[in-house]
Length: 438
Image (spheres, rainbow, N blue to C red):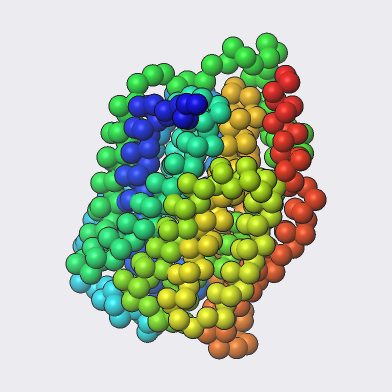
């Protein structure tokens, strides 16, 4: 009896590049929210930054899918990481120049006047970084099937998610809090360097990764609109993936509603310091790493449909529980379970998409899927910020910051009821079998 086939050197270069860029992102998970809260304490303005980060998933995802299917996917990843490095470095320089007028990182519980110029720069940079992220991530997901065999996709995705989660939420945030204690600008420069290093690593992956369209129909549509329509139509006709995309979109809306003002919740309700704020994410890292290693086996044992239902139901319970806690260290346990559930969902659904979508359509269908799945996040951020303002006008600020967690829990419970009969193991296996017989 032989073990699983090795994933190969090309995959491992992508693997290391993902670790590097997610390490920088993890540093940014502490640095950027803390910077935003030093520039303004207005919940709507804080939520607007989160909305700007995700807005490109609503307005740029579909064109990004066409681009991904037209260009070399490795080169697209490299170019986008270089762009992200440059934009992040510009923000770092601006923060460095204004460092003397920013409050100390460990004093951010009281009101501070809004620094309009720096806020505007951060908002614009966040939007640009989000656009680059859309194209880069879409290219990365469509590149992976060219690096590993189809039956190894779940294992490869699991390894990637485990490593990315470790770097993003276990190593990066504590490092970010240490750098933040030295200077506001330092973690931002580290983030910029990580993007550049990741670009250099991806550039070393040998091969050409422009999509082979020989398997496409001879009468396939030509032109941007026609190609977008082709990808969208394929997704919309596929009942299972269509349902997954819509459910995930509303799930992400719920999560964004709760987390849009999370930095204010952590500072004013949980009373965290920058270091404690970083530690909050470490629970998610432990859960995410665990999920990355066990997702494939758990899906085989209890069925992928049951795993998706577990994600929705478990998330609802955890959000409601977060809304009532008083101590930051309890939230660590909640984030650990949430991290495991999130990776469990991603490994199952991403591997399914990569295995059943035709290669010549993968970029476009994937982008259409993510248009629904991620495009709802800026709407959720706006709902979260608006909820805090509205409830804050009727009750205390603490009550307002807690309310968004209950709103998120209610949405997830509704999704669990809807998905119970539609995202089943039988439906998933039927979709896989349909591909195997064509």
